[in-house]
Image (cartoon, rainbow, N blue to C red):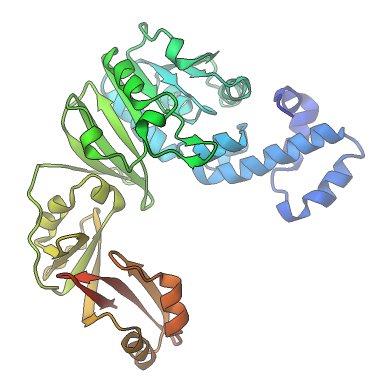
Length: 385
């Protein structure tokens, strides 16, 4: 079913309500029972939508997800609610009161913008996606703030809006697209669309090379619950600024152009910077904060003799051993110390954590973390309590 309208009827709503907490493993039996009173097509559509809502809870929270409508692609590509809200707050703080949301998807960003008090034009060229945005705006009571337009974003006049937000499609028939000029629309088009308005935010993949960031834009890398989610190019504010933002806490680290930290011997503590910090090339700022240096010039692990539990930008570990890489030696240590829970982290090592756990076979009541990495160029193991 490529039409949401049957699900918006009273019958469709009743079915969705009944399926809210359904067990996906029992869908065949559930469908058989529901088809006694409802058409097979409607039952199939309702079960599919209920399944998408369950998946969407992780991004939108249960309160919104079970009222919204989704497409499979839309759930996969939608921005997590804390990230969308963060961007909306930044735009609102700039005095933005209207935004053209180009490539709106199922409307996650438009919803966050509207809740920040911003009037939104949500544009998507796919008819079902546009209908989904419209249904979501209605379901969440935001229809007065969100206008939906089914159109090619490259043909939309954004002249009447304070800002544009562009989220180009970064997946194609063969999966993820890494070349920004292969985005739909291309990054170069999005940049020019941004320059045409006083303010803009362009959502892009976090792996974008820094040299592709235009001089008149700021760049922000965002992580949520420890996972790097996206990079944003900002126009109309602090050109040349680089920052890393960690959500949900809202901690932001702004680059100061520091030189790379010096390499030094492993000290008592090892600090693992957040992924957004690493992507933003702000490891030096964290090293300065914890009074540390690198364990290797190519590895983003920071070492220090000082304990800094207060920094939100890196996780600290107390190191008990620094050893040459040797799985037999690691196995002996794990056995001697009764380590049954072994967390394996790696950076600069080709060995997979699953292979380490298989060969070491941890057993016992204690826990530890081992880092497989390089220390001054040499393959090494760092054991932490």
